[in-house]
Every structure is written in structure tokens, then in C-alpha cells.
Amino acid sequence: MAKKISTLIGMPINQFLNLVKEKENFSVRSARLIPLIKPGDEMALTSIFLSAIRLVKEFRDEIFKEVGLSRAGQVYVFTEVSFKELKREQPDGLIIIVGRGKIKDAALLEIKNKNSVLNEEQVQSYIDVARKYKIKKFITVSNQFVSTPTQTPLNIKPSKAVSLYHLSWSYILTKAQILLYKDRPTIDDPDQLEVMREVVKYFEHDKSGVTGFTVMKKGWKTITDKIRSGSAIKNDDPQLLDTVSGWLEEERDMALVLSRELGVLVQSGVKRYRADLKGRINYEIKNLLNNRALSSILRVKDAASDITVTASFDMRIVQMEVFLNPPDDKTNRGKIGWIRRQILSAKKRNPEEYEKIAGDLALYIYIKRQSVPEKVTLDEMEYAWERVKNVDIKEFGVRLEKGLGRNFEGVKKVVSEMEIMLLDYYKGIVQYLKPWVKPAPKAKQKEEMKSLDNI
Image (cartoon, rainbow, N blue to C red; front, side):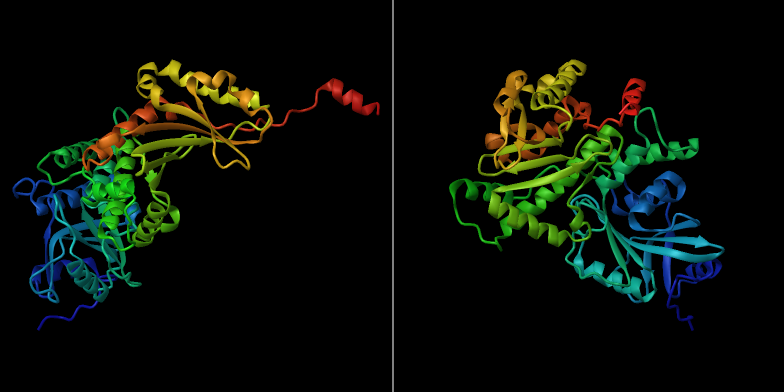
């Protein structure tokens, strides 16, 4: 009679391995780096991913950090995990972390590739099994995008016993590419570095099943047409949900596209909805209905400002803007001169990239107690101070604005246009902007001190 098992956590690893051999309670298959499975097969991708986690420390640390797994201990990875509680279905992967001979942490995985999407009922049944065995983490992986790993594309009620995480394949690939970035890879061991390179080659192959976000959902064009024609749109219009969810996937993809260009992970999303994708969707639906626009924020480490990306449906315009506070020790003429010098410096340092965007670039002066900012073209900057002599300048916006016309409605074209626009914007201007830093206080000179002594 099989021994009843109620938990993995705390079990001696030797006992676990014996149970695997016995196949009484469950069975697993060791993940291999290069499995003998046809390229593009879902289990091939799963096995390569899990093997890379086991073999490459820096990659493992990056993934484990995102899903809350312990980074200390020996790592075991398995595929095709079967539990007696599940009749025909089986989770795709199992990760266990061992310390002092006992399992101290574990995660089950469900993985999809290509156009396959996660099944809510299936994932829920796996979470129930995870809860029974006290496996506290469940990870889904697919080509579906979310803003952060703590969000899920599934409409599943959160469980207190099992934390649910989601990673897109593009996110995983970007993490790996950053570790290999150009001439400064951050993997110390040369053998592990080569393993990571091989894994990335497989992930990048067009038959691997790893895809980026390339097409807005069908509702995008319909909602654009309705807004432009002034047609009524109801809150529960399924095409509205299509449009917003597609926008959020594109938000994440833009962040990953820029991440791969810069070699640092670009963050996206609204912080208060970090673990609440449904809440973020509802927030953006209201924004679209009220303002006829959708906005996203991309955060680049050490950049002068976050990048705000806005799609205006009524005008079919895409805007990208960074905001800088003006120096508080200068007159308005000096403040505008400060931002003008930065823009001219960008032109001088990278004229080829700057010229790509110059025709659509403008300075916006945001004034306190004035709802609409003053727009200043690049040609007007030198004398713009004369228009704002006696006002209180709140901040500057350096904005790239492009009318896409019919391309805005194109579910493929709008994605490619925005991603090209983002890279051009960052290369041509954003990377050269610097925030104003208040100068350090200056010590009094000797003559000043003497004058004070004589008072």
C-alpha cells in the first residue's frame, strides 16, 4: 500500500527521489537541456527553460527573484509531473529547492507556447493540488503578457495558500538577453555563459514557440471607429475589453523591446495595480471612455524621467513625453535656456537619430494654474522665454507626437509604428536628457566672514 503523502516541504530529498522511483504518489521526468523532442514542441521548450534555470546561476537568480523562490540551496527540476489526484492532466514542471537535505521550497509550473493560452479550469485544478501538497507557488508561462509577474492573465480567485505568478516567454527571453548583453555579459562562469547562449539561440528560433506581441486584438479597430464616429460605447462592450487588454500587452512588449536595446530591464504598469490585472483593466476602461485615450508609463533606471506613452483614439495620434523640473535658481529665460541646451546637445551628439524625430518633436511648458501647456517648436525655443516672462513654470515636457492616420486602426501596423517610434525617441533625445540637480551650498568666503565679524 502506498504511503500517504500530504506535503513536499520538509521531506528529505532522498525520500522524494525514492517516491519518484516508486511512482506511487506521483511521477516526474528529469528536465534535459537538449531534449529528444521535435523543435517547437511545448515540452521541449519547457525542458530547456527548466534546465537553464538549474545550470545557469545568474539566470536562475533572476527568475527566482521574480517568483519569490529561495535562491539558496540545491535546485532540482522536473517535467511532466503526475499526481494521483489528477486523472489525465499533469502540470508541465516542478522546481524544488533543497537545503540541508530537505525540500524547503517548491513551485509547480503550467507552460504554453505559440498561440496556446492558459486554461483557467486546468490551472485551478493544479493550484488545488499544489495547496494539498503545501507547494506555495504556482507559475504559469505563455506568450500572454502582463505588466508584472504578480499579475495573471487568468480570471482566478487568489489563494492565500498558493501564490500565483505569470511570466511571458518574451519576458524570460529578455531576462536572458540582458545577461548576455553585447560585450558585457553578466554571467561569471564561462561554461554557464555558453549554456545561456545556446538557450537564447533556441528561444530566438522562429520555431521555438516563443513570440512577442505583434498584433492588437480585433476590438482595437472597432473601438477606434466608434470613438471617431461618436458612437455610444457601453462599459460591458467586449471590444472595449479587447482594446484595453491589447494595449496592456503592447505596454509590456514596448518595455521589453526597449530593455533588449538598453541591456537593463525597463519597468511598466501602474504600481497600485501590481498584483491586480483586473483592477488595471477596469481603470484603463474608464480612462478610455472618459478621455478617448489610453496611457502607459515606462520606467528606465537612471533616465531623467519616466516615459509616458499615450494613444489618442479620436485624433489617431501617439504621443511620447518625458517631464523635467526646471532649475529653481534661474529666471524663466534661464530655465528655458537650460532645457534648450540639452535638446541642442542631443542633436549634436547623435544627429542621425535626432533628425529621425526632429519634425515631430516639441517642447511643452507646463505653467501653474494653467490647464493647457504652452507648445514651443524647436525653431521657437531661443525666444520662447518672451512668451512666459511673468508666469510660474511648473515643468517641461519634451514630447514626440505622431499622427498615424489609418495606421492607427491597423492592428499590426500600430504595434510596429509605436515600437519603432519608442526606440527612435529614446535614441534621439531621451538618453541625453538630465534632471536638474540643486547645487550644493557654498561656504562663505574669507572677506564675507571678516565683514560679519565687524558687525
